[in-house]
Length: 61
Image 1 (cartoon, rainbow, N blue to C red):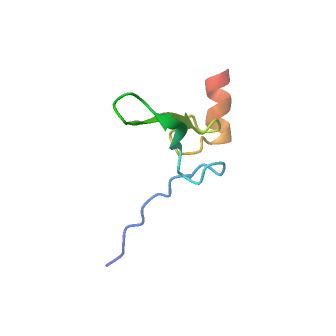
Image 2 (image 1 turned 90 degrees about the vertical axis):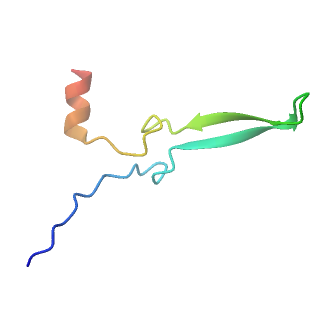
């Protein structure tokens, strides 16, 4: 019996699949919560998956 292989997803080389990160701004608000912002990878726009070069050209066309 043959094993089915899963198709490999292309992980973004810029962020290694960790596309979003919470960054603390320092300090706390009035209720005591940390002030944070979410930073997304500029290469994959927060998806963690790299776009194929040929698909990227179709989108820009």
